[in-house]
Image 1 (cartoon, one colour):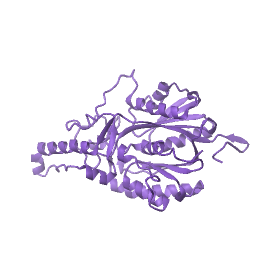
Image 2: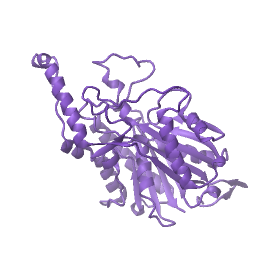
Image 3: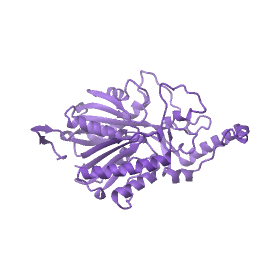
Length: 383
């Protein structure tokens, strides 16, 4: 029924389709070796500057990192960023992103527009058919006006637009919302953008997390099937949330001037990685298997998994449990080695870069999971 418009209580129900995706990659790339060199210089300088306090037991010395440690812990080898110089400067250890005038497009919106233009080109449809824009991402550049409205304005799209944040699950939550708008008849097409400047909220002085994130932007066009040239039937979407403090970022307008030092670190990304692994992985596996059963898909026969790109060990375990065997690299797509964790955009990068070989009728799964906790599953079938 998901492949065609059908009668339901004597009413034609529009069928939502993922018509196209798009990708924008920032111009700067940082290898593990480059990141470690800067970090270890920072560590050496910190320990030297605080030698007396460390000797007195008042401070714990910082430990150096290594490229081998990063790859073993995460599977990450490199990442793209909007600014490389600031991140690799031991005296700065954060991206230098100059503030722009209100008359200029914001950095986040600009990245989203680039990804959107790629998706719109891949779609080939009439932009006038798009009735809504959703900016679904982890960290918005500002509270208002909405980034989505700025993207809408830059692209000349009518209708309405709004921002939504469900951390790393934002893209799948955005797809679900877009699909509901289409199937409900509110609009014929929706543009979902996922601009992620994750380097902006990353603590580059923390050995356990300084390597995790990268920057990128993705976009998805969801339309009524009559507007799609090929694309992907959406067989089913499902969302889940469960509160947890194990992944958190406390920065906000109430504490934007928080002093440096004790307590300041939680204004950036913090997580209890082992707890996240133990609690999120079983939740996601159960969610995928249950959802597959409900939409009539045998998870063992899925051609491909496009999972959230957070950690190679998480993805390996989810892949093995869902497919009930060790998946091949073609079945369980990994892009975090080159992109690192790009939050909501990760699963969309995987889908965008590794879906062109599907034949009509073959099925796959787009899945996200992350802070909240939050998780989303989108089963798709090639049209």
